[in-house]
Image (cartoon, rainbow, N blue to C red):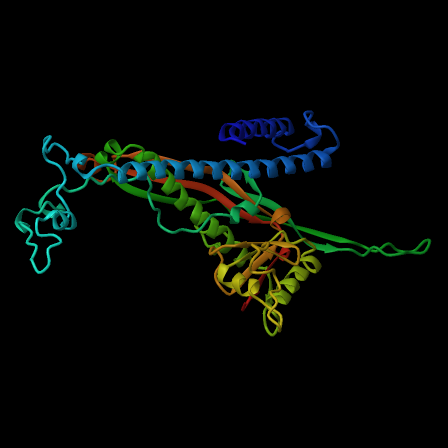
Length: 403
């Protein structure tokens, strides 16, 4: 297909996919989709095929675009290589200021060229050589890309359900005693007495904040600078939050991260292999916490050792090096993140027994009222959010140490 045909087909597929998602709604209820026939499973399979077709069409279109770029480059190169030297002129140098001949051209055109034992003398005045340091410095225009500082991707909070609150403290009741004395009893016998005790538990709403000084001129003269700075400050807040929900100490104003729960379970590596230690941690979550692990959080350096594990004859246990591999272990999704300290992994049922309550999302403010900023033409940009990290059942989580 031509580039135009591929573009048209991609647009049609994109419109069809957009219609499917629109009909499915935010809760992705495939039963609401009317533009596809069949049950929900058939509709999901159809959507997967559409996605695969779009990926294939995009690849074909990108290949054609690359070929088109190559053709343009070849045409430009052909034009340059076939332009006579005497037609190349320097900017604003006048109609007679043609490019200087090379040493080779001057040598071949010399009257003594080809004569045996007759020297060829070239008349070259090196003092007037037209060069960058003594002449025309080429213009260099900065491209529109900013190479940002290497920072980790933020994904930990993606695995944690989020809620909202209008309070400064999250309070809830926790069942601290559950005594089940139910038993079979004969007619006229005494019933077993049960016991239930509930304790009020609370987690404080904490604040994460940062600020940045900037001059009036920087904001006024650089297009998009205010938006750029807002984005960087937002990342700083989210970066800190990502680490706090995993490893916050819980000592105000820190959030209480999963790693520092008072009753979190522990599985030491000891003499086990790392996959074995992970499975034992999952078992503790299931048998003691009566929960189901939803994710394993692990430092990339620790996951590397697991991914590269081989059998005695060199067969990779977690897939061939030619495959990207799936970040899963014992069926549980794995999140590689440097938010987790090396040599320790955390697993647990984040889906059912944790919630990140947002009192207020990220708010950005700017002022010149700070210190002497008003008379010095400076601005203070600040960003902050308020939230609370709550774990409803400590035993639903387990850390693996010594890995």
